[in-house]
Length: 165
Image 1 (tube, helix red, strand yellow):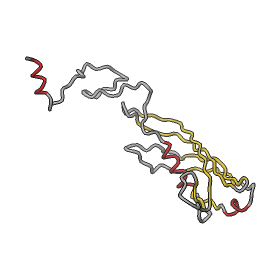
Image 2 (cartoon, helix red, strand yellow; image 1 turned 90 degrees about the vertical axis):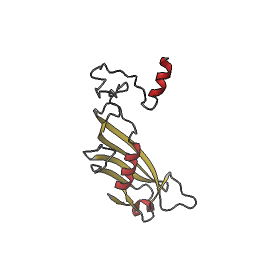
Image 3 (cartoon, rainbow, N blue to C red; image 1 turned 135 degrees about the vertical axis):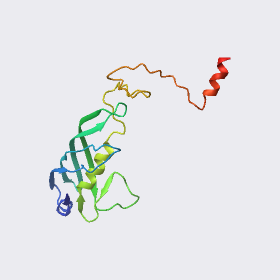
Image 4 (cartoon, one colour; image 1 turned 60 degrees about the vertical axis):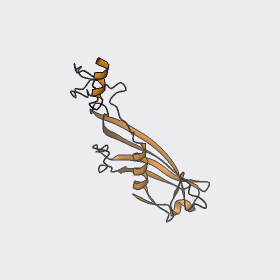
């Protein structure tokens, strides 16, 4: 969604409401597609005392896979973002400012970046997830297995014979 900000930058007190959906169904993170339904964006862009700011909320249901046991995890997410928009930066680049040189904001690109950066790097189905057994592959949250956990690295197995004598 492209938003023309020319009038907003010129008139103090002007504001523009944002109420749209962002399609992130093509987004792939590993083997997962977190957003099968659109992400809803709701917010406002306003000019207060010559400072143009964007504040919005992104809401969706994210579909992940537990990093320990591979169980599906559906999580409602609500992310809040705030940015200051400027026509240009005078000196060194500032990561806190969003430069809009042609006074047209690509909200889809900005919101996509914001949402992707907020996604968790590790997802667990529950805080104390026991994961999968490395020997038999059983889900330790659902069943216990009788596998022996003490396995010697085959490269070091010869050294264990020294301890037997």
